Image 1 (cartoon, one colour):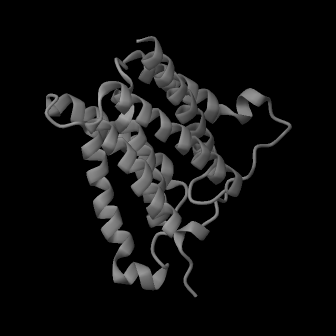
Image 2: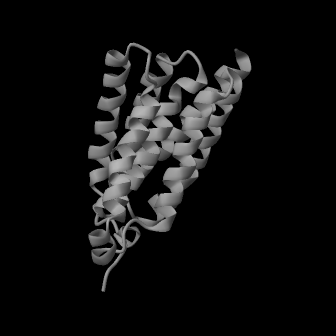
Length: 199
């Protein structure tokens, strides 16, 4: 019997209640630090569109590969790709497009006949997530400055709910990553709204 990647459950145990909260929620603290770095370099909300695209790519990639722990590898790989695109692209190519382009080989890999026979391919929910969040990031680039910023913020708020669902279910990605992404997405979205309103 074949099982789709959506049914892959994280083997990571729930945080031990006996450990201090700072230790149990290290992923949330790491997310706060990452948010500060991103916000420091943000001039307008649409600048965060690559992060929204990366969020879509990481979950979809982990689902296609069927290994929840690969979320961290995909995340750090996305960060490297975004920085490389910014440094080498010279502003001609937005990193959002580069990140979304990386989803295409994963989509082909996950929907190939052999994968569909072996594991059922990526779950429809993950395909929908890739299209919804990746699409929001792409649309934000073509919208006006404020409209694009609000679209990215809405996408990040939506993805925070996505993270919460996956944290609770323990599927697709490991729980520490879902916690990290939830905090990152929620704070970034709120920051974008604040910057856009006051700007």
